[in-house]
Amino acid sequence: MIRLLVVIISVLLFYMEPIFGLFSPIELNDSFYTLVPRFLIMYLIFVAVYYDRKKAMIYALFFGLLYDVFFIDIIGLYSFIYPLICLLASFIVKYIHQHLLVTTVLTIVLVILVEQLLFLFYTISGIKSITFSDFYQFNLIPTVIANTVFICMFGWVFKYILLNRFKQKALTIPK
Image 1 (spheres, rainbow, N blue to C red):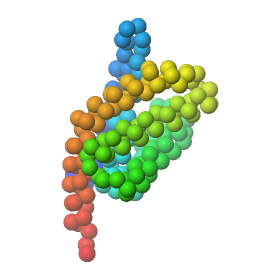
Image 2 (cartoon, helix red, strand yellow):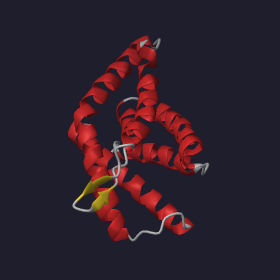
Image 3 (cartoon, rainbow, N blue to C red):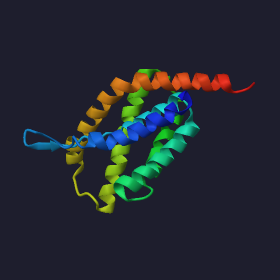
């Protein structure tokens, strides 16, 4: 069972994103703020940092493709961005310390990168016509705040689970 825990958490987070997406947009002072949950990519970044880069890339490709098929009908967007972000995280972590606080900040920065890449794609393709200042104020900042709260609540759990799974994997490899 512990062997499948990494995949089970990924599947749960994949299904939790649209559920939390139902709470968005939030209306405050006659303005609508959009909170986009990015739970899965944050978890996959933790998988790339604390567990295994190759598995993180495989999971990112698989869940990115699922996200493309089920939610946006543009095949290739998330299946390109998710593995790219996992690859960036694994390369960056080679040069910085794998402390939980550093990984949390890295995760938030990479979520910002995901949101900006998606904004650029939607703007260039003409799917959305929103200015960058409106995107920044009404989409990016609320998304970052919501995802920061999530990763602060569950980041240490992810690290604990992934490091224990890594240790268990290391013990089962014959020498």
